[in-house]
Each structure stands twice: as C-alpha cells, then as structure tokens.
Length: 393
Image (spheres, rainbow, N blue to C red):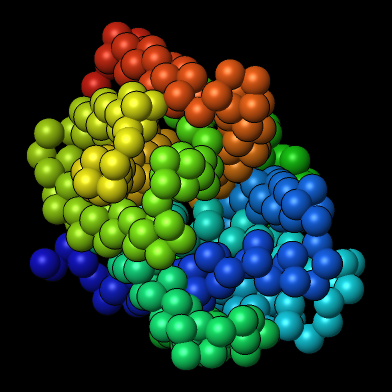
C-alpha cells in the first residue's frame, strides 16, 4: 500500500485517538449534562451553538490555511484544543463554563478540518483519493467503536462515575496531540506572501469557485438538509421496543461496519468513479430510511444499521475526495472547509426539520420524506453533473 504514506498513517492515528476520546463521552454526554442540572432545551441550545461554532470556523480556518501555506500548525492546534476541552467539563458545572468547554472542543474541530483534509489530498494522486480518504475515514471511525466500548466497560464497573470518564478521555486526546508532532509541513512560504483573512472571506471562494464545485456542493447540501442526526435512528429503535443495551450495541455495530468498509469502498471508488460510488451510497441511504419507516424487530434493525454503515463508508470520505479532485490544489482547504461549514449549518437545520415532522406527523413520515428527498438528490447527481476526469494535483 505505497499510496498510504507515513503522513497519511500519522494523520489517521491522530484521528483514531481523537475520535476514541470524543466517542467515549458521546453516549453519556446528555446523561451527564442532565445530572448537573441541564434541561433538554438547554442541552439542545448547547449542542446547536457548539456545532454552529465548528461550522462557521471550518471555512475561515480552511481559507487561513490556504492563504498562509501552512497545514500542520492548524492540525496541531485544533487537536490540542479538543484534547484540553475533555477534562475541562469535569472541573466545574456552571452552565457558562460547560458552554465554553463544549464550544472550544468544536472550535478545535473547525480549526483542523480543512488543513487536515488538504494534507490528505496532497498525499494522494487524483486516482488514489478514494483510497487515501477511505483509509483515514476507516481509522477515524474505529475510534467510534473503541470509544463507546471503553466508556461502557468503565461505567459497567463504576456506574454513574461520569466525571472520571472525562479525565480518562483526556489520555487518548493527549496521544493524538503527541502523534501530530510527527507531522511536518511540506509547503514553505515567506511572510510577505501571507494574505490577511477576514472571518467570512471563505464566502468569497463560493462566489469565485468553479461551476462544477458549486453544482456538486449544492447537491451535497440539499442531501444534508434532509439527513438528520443519527439520534433519530436510535430513537426509532427505542420506540420499537429495543432496550438501551441493544441500542448502544447497534450504534457500535454501525460504526464497526463503517470502519471496516471505508477503505475497501475507497479502493472501489477509485475504480468506478467517486460520483458513482457516492450515488450508490445515497441509494443505500434511501433504502435504510424507507426500511426504518416500518421496521419492527431487532434483526431488521441490525440489517438496516449494517446497510447504514455501508452508506456512511460510501459517502463521508468520498465526498471530500470528490471535492478535492474538482478544485485547485491551492484552494483545497478552503474548498473542503467551506463545504464542511455549510454542511454543519445544514445538519442543524435537518435535525430541526426532522424533529418538527416527527412531532406533527410521526416517525414513519419523517423517514419516508427523507427517503423520497434522497431519491431526488440521486437523480440530480445522475443527470445534472457530468463525470469529468479529475484535475491533476
């Protein structure tokens, strides 16, 4: 696997450690917040504010990375901030402090995302983007298997000891930061070449970006508007009678499938085309959501979450690989950061829309509407976007 370079390996390990830390806390975060006095509404406001911070900052820091010609400092600072935020939430329980801690965790993600994905793009050729992004996504997602598993194991022996878990999550966070110092910047610029960067300057990129980029990202964002949080899938499973253990087990199973298939699907995507693979992923997504609308038993849920893992493997890394192939190398971090920023905002809107439809019309209608919308997005990609040879990077 000569296309998986030392840099790709290092970045993948950094992501593995970071996701292990984050996902260790993911299942218990709402429970912990409720124990320190947060209402459901306040939890929603906290998560929404944190995600908005991450979303808006992705575009800005992606643009800043391109303008400065630097990648590694953004990666190191981003992962460091996220690591520090883990134990911070356990020190004090004041709402403002919790808001601050959670927000800087998401800010760290915003700082590193564009620069990190630009490094991955630079380490690949146009014909190996699927493999490289797929490998990184696979390693990253293994963290989403390890994290909840370790968290559940700890809570099994030490029930409700949530605060200690925040300190334990700091350990893989520190390992991620240490691993990031093995990375070296390949791009060198002199200070006079660095341009000033306004916070919303990434929006200028959207105006001046290639037509193909606009068309692809438009389709991706329309899909995102209907792709609500995975929490709704877990809520549907809960509604149909699955107990908490089964639900967490299904979530870990989904992440395991996602991790196992990301790399081989990336290899296949390089052969059949990134657009084709992404479209197949959307078709699988639609099947899952239509299935969710009438699913009633554990085995059917397991089958659907298996397919959902395949969908994630066929779309998450593939989308970024696709974007990096249709934009200039000098704009890679800006292009991916701009997309990721808009995606974060659309994700928030999607969950609000899904919640409204669920409340007014029921769970089944929510999943059917999403499935139908996805079919229209598939048609858009099939007939509105021509498959072109990737740009030479």
